[in-house]
Length: 195
Image (cartoon, rainbow, N blue to C red):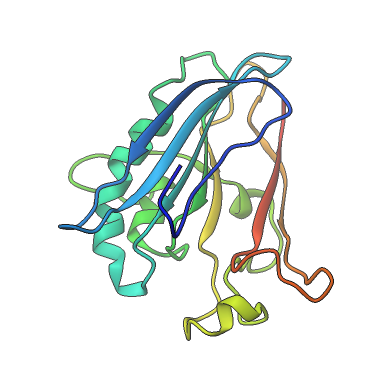
């Protein structure tokens, strides 16, 4: 789903059910972004996975991205029951780790009297700076924006009974040329979670 310039998709080895779309809050005539939530029919029980992207990509668009986070967090969590696998929220947030919008998702900041809590997979189990927008990438270099981490995998609190959803490993991927071509303007984030 998305528009002619940007889109998102979810691919799984397991059947995907309960496909639901959500439009992130825009600004006037400009669309704000998109989120897609599915439930993967995993062998040990369903997993709710939400992929999102904010179309507000400039550093000074923080106030626009902030307005999107409470609705997005609610959308990512609303299909998950108390004893289910924790919700996964991943995507291109176009926001640095220290930003209000990312701090909100990590439970470190409230917005308009609401709060949320997701584990930042990179912060929990990654190594190094985790930059996913980098000047080493030919596609990103022309933007004249600083190298930084703007793509994330977030996971709800691990299930207390068995630790399901605990982040065991996280790495930046797709961060090298293949046959002298970059896969994307962003690097990917790979996370392994306890089943």
